[in-house]
Amino acid sequence: MEQRFNRVLVAIKDGAAVSLKAVKEDVVELSKYYGSELWKQDFAADEAGILPSDLKRGVLSEDGIWNLFSDYREIQKKIQ
Image (cartoon, rainbow, N blue to C red):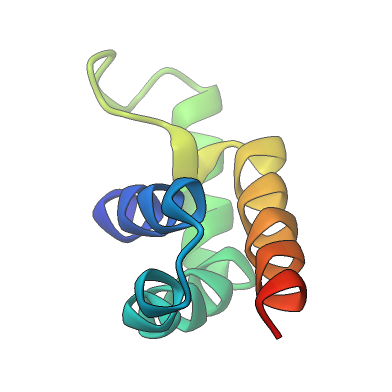
């Protein structure tokens, strides 16, 4: 999921319609994950210090994932 998160983040920074279209599936999968019990379990494990300290945590950050979705929607609106 972190790889998907990073691909979407790069596409948002690029801001090109082609880039955003290329990551649409990633956004769908991230949305499913963020609303799932698996995300809640991963988040709890991170909060408990169970996950490795060198693990990237963008997808486990509530603010990070919320901002990613918000930025994605905003750029899509501008392009349309």
